[in-house]
Image (cartoon, rainbow, N blue to C red; front, side, top):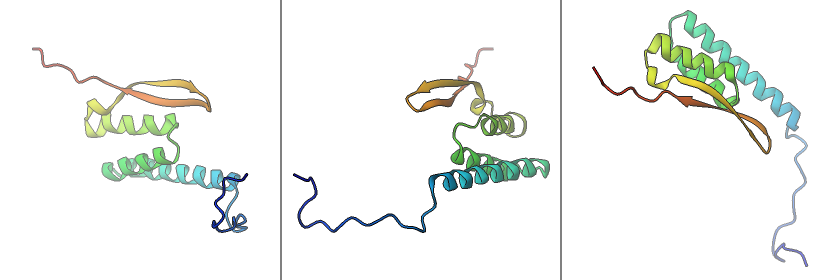
Length: 113
């Protein structure tokens, strides 16, 4: 017996206009590169807010990118002086689909002094 209800519409064939997986990956890689370029250019123009937005967009397109995470960390450290958002280290963990990059943030310093 089939799990499809008797009154269900027939399945539609895949759209011939939908891009293939390799085309989608190429587009994603191009978007990532574009946002990294915008971030670097914005930094040279001292537009810190635009650089931050661009690096965040780059991370959305490639959340495992060490280069994007390093760029935004350096931006927080050098230009924004927000040390609590600077990763202390980048940790690579293995999972079922391969490797995943994550960051560990500095713990806020206690006020002793």
